[in-house]
Image (cartoon, rainbow, N blue to C red; front, side, top):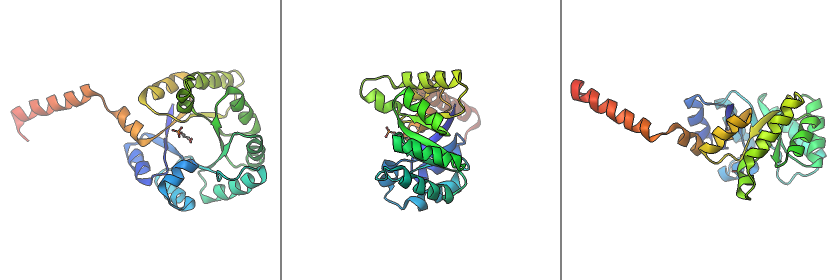
Length: 217
Ligand code: E4P
């Protein structure tokens, strides 16, 4: 399983990139709004840091296929690594069909059922983004959805990649890896938590103490 970072904050993108663990970035309208900066400016800055797929979503207020197609073409022009993120609706699928026929890569977002994922894949999506955490939030195990989609895509040899989204904690990450997600898109705070273990910290402290006792600083 590969990692993308789920943020529109360039400092977080830079920190994760320097760690060497991420190979892509996902943004969404809420993450862009949180930064309060111009969409194109933020995306260009992210693209100068990470050499991998960068998902930029069509405007949250654009709901018709025609509008999504026009915006998708503009997003694709920002940088060769751009992936156009499109919501899972009938209009969204129509837009995916047209954009993918033009060679523009897409990420169908807000996937909450296996059938939605299968339809998005058949419409030509490069990626599907099932939302794990938001399902957990309503007492439905999100990981079951990731497993089911992975199984279906495997049976039919579907090339669309599964991005496990709405990842909230380290257990989600291990579960997604076991469930067969191709990618997990993870907030910076969760990546950082995953680097830590109390025994690692204790081990470093003991090595430093033992070393200093004999060799000093
Ligand atoms: C990424 O593609 C999604 O937009 C994001 O992971 C959603 O996460 P959230 O449910 O924590 O907002």
